[in-house]
Length: 159
Image (tube, rainbow, N blue to C red):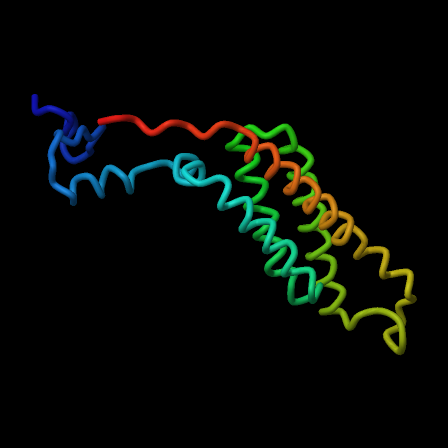
């Protein structure tokens, strides 16, 4: 039986790439890395990117929510993969931001609140999870950045 190829007719059960100096073969091995491995190559850069998106998106809450939400999601992913102490806190913040953004777009689609809409200004309380989640995500991401930056960097393997 050939090494690493078919056992059934057309299905490849596993693929063992032969050791080679061919750059294309190395690219295929690198591209087969899992999402966790790709994210954890540079967790510091990703956390700074998440923190920046949380700050930039806060300038305009409605339009910025499309920047804040992925930033909070990225902070949540990196926090889980880095096994941060604050990962649950940041994930709860992400859920609050998600609920607040959904409520904001649904309320906007319904015509808003106050004025001639027939909905009182108390409907603004429906939007409260968004700023609460934003503050939580900002604090949690900042704490995660401090935690990850204080860890020693993994040493590169000598080949």
